Image (tube, rainbow, N blue to C red; front, top):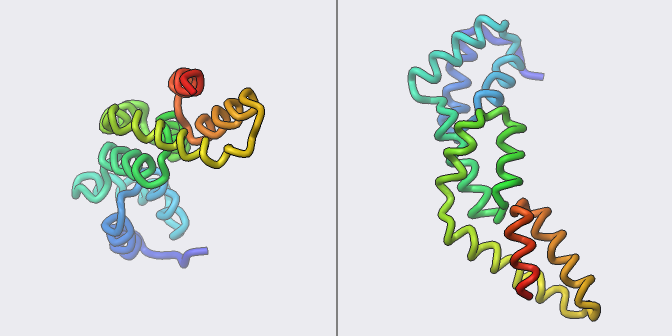
Length: 154
């Protein structure tokens, strides 16, 4: 539990929190409420943060989506779910997903599939092998149509 802070102290802390890395509006509000602030104080601070460009939902969504794709190789379905969970607007989610290069997206999917197939070498039954590959790629958040086409090609 965070200590109760005055709105001025909370604003200073939250600026540092936002400067460290991109944050969603929901994360910032949750942190401000944990400082013991009331709704009107939280709304006022969030408005100031947006005006001062410490907080930008679109920028957050683009950074988040790009990072999860590049580092964890998540697909668009999983990224969308994660952004929804962080209460990002549908407009910002759509904009963030457009920033992911389609060629990189497909090559990453193919790379993940070939790496997974290497780990499934001992599986003799081709149907079970394809099913395990399909489940793996769907869990990574890739679209079922892309996964289905790729699995059929193996």
